Image 1 (spheres, rainbow, N blue to C red):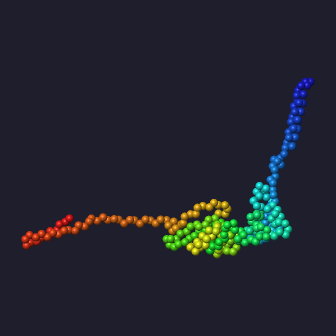
Image 2: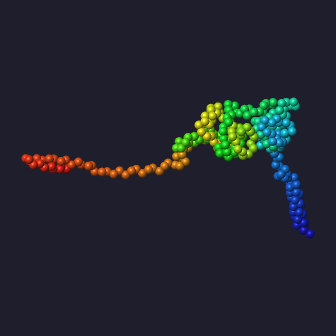
Image 3: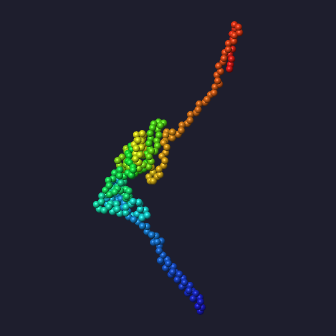
Length: 275
C-alpha cells in the first residue's frame, strides 16, 4: 500500500479544518459597525412647560427638562433650574418676551432676579420707543405683530408733488396698541417701534408732514440696503410723451412798394417802384 497519497490527503484535510477554525474565530470576535459608532453626547436644558407671557414671573412649575445634542446647544441656554431660578427664596426672574411652550429658555429672554419688566426695560441701550399712528391699510392689513421687523415709509404732498420714500429700515416692533404679545392679524391704531434717538425725532416730524406706512421685512437676519430714492408720480406713470414741436412756416418778407410822383410841366404822373 502506498503511504504518500494517504499522507497528502490527510495534510490537506487538516489544513482546511485549520483555516475554518481561524475564520470562525475572526468572524466571531468582529465588533458590529453599530457598536463601533459612538453614541453622541447629550445635555439636559431647561425649557418652558407652558407659554410664559411677557412680564410673567418664572416659577419652577413652568419648567421642564429637555435633552439636546451637546453640539447643538443654543447660546445662553440654562442647563439647570437652579441657575435660572436661583436658590430658594430668591426673587423671581420675569420673561422679557413671550416664551412659547417647549422653547429652551435663554438668558436674553429673562430679566435679572426681582427686576420689573416694562417696555422700557426691553429696549436696547441707546434706543427709544416711539408710537406711530396706523390703520389696516398702513400696517400691512393688520399682520404686523410685536417682534416683527419693518421699514417705515413716508408719503406726503399733493397732485404732481406727491412723493413717498423709506425713512427708516429694519425697525423692531415693540407693541401693537398696548399689547406686547403676538396674537395674529388684528386692526391696530398705534404701533410702538424701537429706534435711535435722532430717528425718534424724525418719526414725530414725519407724522405731521404726511402718512406713515409699514413694510413687513423678511423674518431673520437681513442686511440693510441703501434706502431707495423718493418715488414720485412720474415714477408711477413714467415720463410723459413729448409734445410735437409746432411746424415753423417761413414766409417771404413783404416788400412795400414805393410810389414816385413825376411832374412834367403842368402834368403829373405817379410811378410805382418795386424794391
